[in-house]
Length: 383
Image (tube, rainbow, N blue to C red; front, side, top):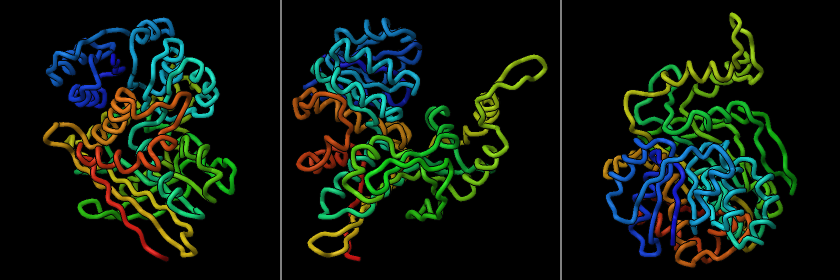
């Protein structure tokens, strides 16, 4: 199988470095606009299966040319490139595992085209969306009647600094949407939109994390795929205490607005200005991070009220020298590419991860994640 990994940042490089270990993969092409980034990826992978390709991916035709001789692609790219890559993949008859879960309604409309092309398009295949999705789906399936599914996740610094107690370990573009976009959730079989930064609650994780806060954020594909299987479903994102209130103040004052304003004859959006100001302040003094995850599903099983919960507290990976967020985001996507290549996943169409890693595939996938260093603990209790 020929695999193209689009984007050679820390996540893409991790995907490449892990994929080379599988006999189902014959060749991997690491694709990026930056030759320097490609070179670093090739150096880390250190494998004859891997080669590099420098291209901008600026046009549909350019993306198609990259994908036309590939069997599978793993997209580790900005949100803005997700839909163009999916369109090109369908045209090229190339399976896609995509980290981006946004605009799921537009992606689902491409289902028939993907089926006719004989390919699977899998959006939102990281940690959240991704791992959280299939944990929620599995919990719902385990119950006779599912009442509520709550997916909670967040990437936080190991050594937080004031005033925001947060540092960016991937793209600030992805983070900014949390403060500005309404969040899609599901209630009583219907999609609902909740205001950004709503539903603030205190939440605690095992030390050294301790007390945190979480707000409702977008539930991505699960709001669509699971809305008729559970009475309420929503997702929350975790930060250290105090972060959300400060960002809410900036949002209320207009610092995240997309409408351009005039500054001494120059047109600039407040959001772009804010990104430029915040970026250096969100670097942190250490790359060490923590990814926390908790998925809780409640309902009835054999007439008894039950709660199923999964929890993960994952730290910077010193052995691989990568952030926890890069590892926990890359591993599910990488595994799915391997499963497609080895014939374990044969579906076609636009198929979110929660429709794949559920039922008989759930335990084997969790076992492989565990083997890769992503440990998720399960508990059940009667209520």
